[in-house]
Amino acid sequence: MRFQHCLSILVLALTLAGPAKSCGETPATLRLRAGIAKADISSPAAKTPGDPLYARALVVTDGTQTAVIIAVDAVAISGIGSIRQDYLAGVRDQLQHELGIPPRNVLISATHCHGAVGDDIEQKTVKAVKQAWQTRVEVLAGTGQGFENRIMENRRLRLKKGGETDVRHAYSLPPGGEIAGLGPVDPEIGILRLDRLDGSTLAVVYNFACHPIQGIPGGGNTADISGFASKVIEENQPGGCLALFLQGCAGDINPVLYKEVNLPRNAETLGNLLGLSVLKAARTIPTKAGAGLQLLNETVALPRADHRPRIAALQREQTRLLQSLAGASLNLETFIPLYLKYRLAGDFPSGYAHEYLRDQQAGRQDWIQLDTQNRQNLEQYIHNIHIMEELTRLQANLALLQMHQARNVAAGQKTVEAEIMGLRIGSFVLVTFPGELTVQIGLNLKKRSSHPATFVAGYANGYLFYAPTIEQALNPGYAQEDCDCLLAPEWQPLFENKAAELVQRLAPKPLD
Image (cartoon, rainbow, N blue to C red; front, side):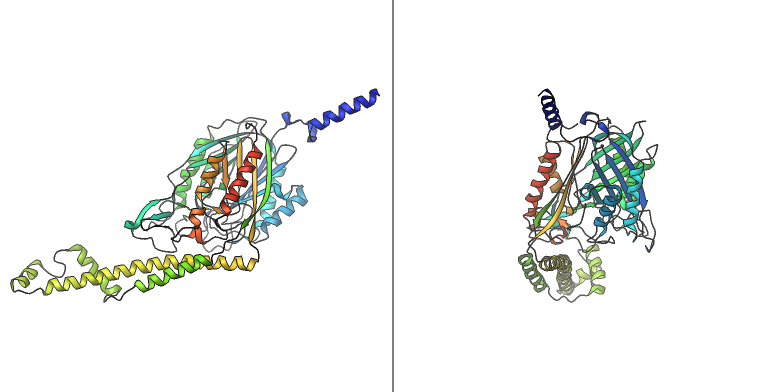
């Protein structure tokens, strides 16, 4: 009886203690270990070489589970760009087979630079992770926030006539007098810092929202803004540091001066600013031992859009705009000199002032009548130009709607699956989405979270094109974010509710 009593006490104690920890460690003594590596994945076939593109790998383990974070300098994890459709599954399968890491524990995030990667990106990514695994060391962790508001702008333009358009190289901007305002930006930089026990920094993970599409002089292959930012961080940390950029909710966020025609496009300037802002904040972050590691991974079915009503509406608008075009006597060759002449000399554009006066003295209005006719032709020609510019915006976005409507019909399903990951390292909380979230989504989730260090990464573990807000998806105008989209407007609350739930499950108690 005494033996049975002791055995019952032992069983009860083990039950209350939860699952056994590896290496005989208890939750209070678990130690965080991490390893880093990177591999050059630049395409050797790029027409114009530029700066290197990398796959950067961070492996973090607490002795009970392992998280792999991979930041890839590419436009997307398949879907668009040069990465094959089977890349994500291929990397995960190899890591599971060779290192025993479950696929759901592997986060692969595209920085969304528009550079070209090589065909061997899968092998190089796996090699980098294996090297990171083999070089793990004990680390201290800390979380903080930086601030940067000089390098980006919201590319959606609110129009006085209603609706919104956006700033793209694919089409012209509307006249400045038609623009009423801009959308929001998110200047917060979310930072996770991992230090070795000797105090040197092993890795800096930073999350920020901005399309890295500025390019470099000469149009070379480039990792763009985030590539230069990571270079600044890595080169200014002694002891060898890896900087991993996790793209935020950048769907409607452009780099500043994106449409500038009087300056060379140079992402290095903006990247240096971002990198310095990360360094400034990271150096103030205290790190400590005992940081917890949690991972959650769920798949959510999101509704596909039926774009037929929107397509029909834009086609009607297209017809209306075409019908508003009217013939004008001018062509481009006559318009430009005539426009300049009437801008330079508004009172007497067609001749010397005394010729007008002589005409009036003789009781004639020949010069005045000529000016009236020319001004009418100029006005009509300018009207036609603005209509044609609007038609180019409409046509580009109508083509996107038609493309995605065809995709959704071909899928034969009313929903599309989205993998959503939740990750917590110490007080750094991250939730991911496989598409181009617009910035308001991230702002909503941060506001909703009770944990100050909550961050959102898009472009992760797949690609589902743009994911606009309900308001943007119902935009009576036309912008890329609400047209280059597979999802119905109802996707937003489904995702935001699931993301909020994951954040709460990751950190139900005060963060360590």
